[in-house]
Image (tube, rainbow, N blue to C red; front, side):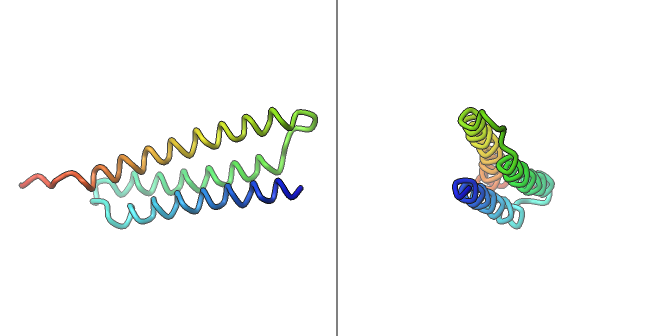
Length: 99
């Protein structure tokens, strides 16, 4: 049971780091991209809640396979969110076009 507790803490830490990054970008992105930053913040919170609830409901008898799939899904979802955050950062690094 302590392994589940540790895993939940790691998922929470990952969620907090992604959310904080999205929050900072939300504060500095141009108004035209605030919705995308808000969507990434919401997606991050939903990801954290979903994965923490999955930890609490492991499949009996098939734990090893369950956790392999869990880690693969978590990695995939976190990378998707990170890619969205990277896109927003790239928008900030582009030079402004004169009007």
